[in-house]
Length: 204
Image 1: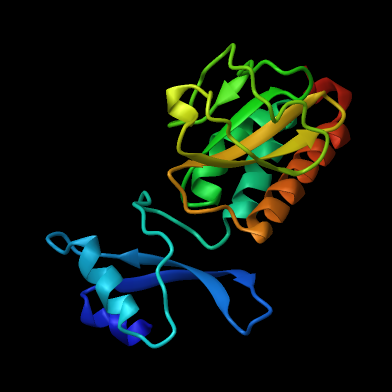
Image 2 (image 1 turned 120 degrees about the horizontal axis):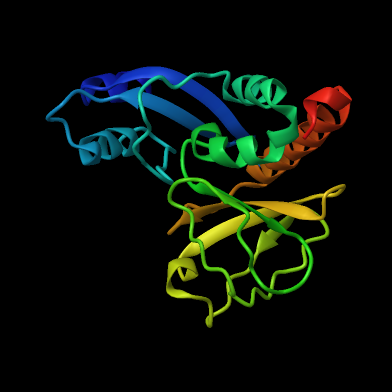
């Protein structure tokens, strides 16, 4: 892979192993610096030239990426523990290198957006068949969903002690891996723990 990416003019600056599959394959997330003038399609072609390699998704990511995104998120939440869940929602696009986040009530059946990261659909009043959320869940989008939700793939995790839920979604895919759902659930649990552990004077 390194040779193929290099031949296409790319420079690998980060690799995350996203998922181990039982068939001997893995899903890796490569962060590649591609010089100006080079088209992403050339990178996809180069990767596909390697035996047994498929490309599931390619997207743009802002400069300054790090392999320690989760730790940086924890640090940011610790700085403002009373806003831990809101901060996590804001950071979801960077944590997962794509997609968006929403914070909303976990109960009822009507979508009421309380916090949204950049790029997220904000359709208050949407009668969402996947609400209420009581456990980490893959969200099934109905055919009658508003236009911004039509091509969305998403998962949701409840914030048990506040009656809220955090949704992570992508417009048009790729699918959200089981490991990504587990990672989101872990981060939500960390957000709750950080907020609960904060001294009373730090919590609004």
